[in-house]
Image (cartoon, rainbow, N blue to C red; front, side):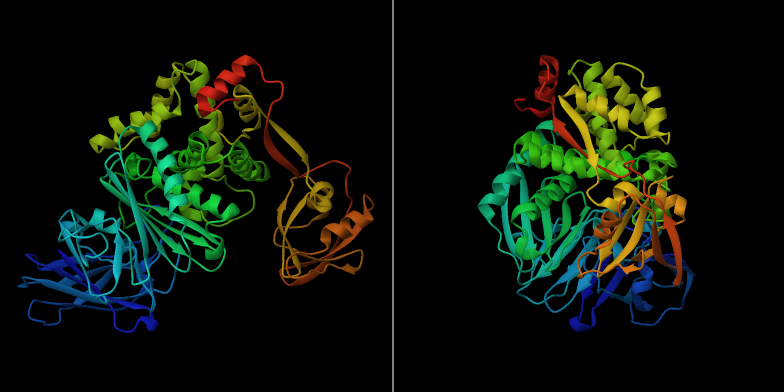
Length: 585
């Protein structure tokens, strides 16, 4: 199986792709394009980006074909020895999981745009790029001819699964550096306008990667490539692969400064741990991947939640993040949990299953939880439970190692039962109540999370939300461009009782227009001005103007939550903290 990738007019954003398949011995041959990409639990329907599609035999004669589904073609191949499929793919989207072409680069996720023969998905694939000679190629796939990293334009994959999992960036402006840790080569590639501080980056990466190695004992591959798209606008997106990750971040001029640098470290640590958790340690439903349809699993809270927990925790445990920087990230997850009333309606296990419906947008109000946020808190709680019952002899670290060596290393997927059994094995007790209540039940984590925090000398504190209408009306808004659109309602709050709905736009308070300066509005100021007196609110609801009366309450509805260190921690809590974090209390 061979793929040839080329282009002629980059400004039109079309990539030309040819698949050459020899040893054709059937009257009809199915040709499939993936419908989704691993790392994104929703259908992508990539076939919508195909403009031209044709099939030929080894002599260049056109072959008849028909579409049998939205992304599968049936080609008439009676008497054909070698099948050539030629098509183009529109590549005008730039994120961490897309395919993009312009005059500066060809960036491709083969899973978006490379067809395959389902009956021969496990055959070796050759991948040839027809590019300008001065283009370097950043890719986790092995070069067809051994040479300097980045110089090859031909690669080999053992099967389509490896090919689909091997994104690349090809450009003459790539910036590159590398280092070796425990015999594994780590390559860092930057595409876009940025000025990497290599000493700082490599030092921090060496530290947190070493921490992951210490925990997992073995890395799944011989080399690994961090591929960064440095974008001019604010952006944050990462996608995992076995031998690489693509991370799109911005603004590029802030990439190595302040909070953006912490984001850079956090997402890099997160995506690297995915090489173990989901690329190797994989739910049984995804072993192997089926690219043609949804791969339903209720283990997303492990695949993404555990990875989210460890992504930041590795940085803290290794000393790259300060304690304040770590708690800031944990507080983000906690706040999202407390603001998400979907936790009372759909469990995190069922939300894992339903990511295929609406996992990456807000969906209907208060329907589901987040496998990232809720899963992160759940992972912390699970870690604390294991440590508590085993008197710090075991932890969630042992669970992940066990799943890697007992399942991933044997190409076995793990089930929900396998995960719970492993957690219970490390804890030494049955945990049915915990799993039934917090994994499979729709319940808030607050009390269990407080107990877990207390175990290591932390506590959860809250204070009223700063914005008056959040505190006393029970309403959250998205305020940009001079508008205030309702994004969340506290159930049973004055705003809820008054009949305000999510997505309503608040345009006036007691007849005074809600106005903004392009970055926010004066809604909070007007609500504070009128205090706890009844106020008449003017709304635009589905392009219809209406008025409602809100009776503010002295009760605090939305609050701000955070985790802080106890000043009165006793010796056992300090010992637990030090065993967990590898740091002095």
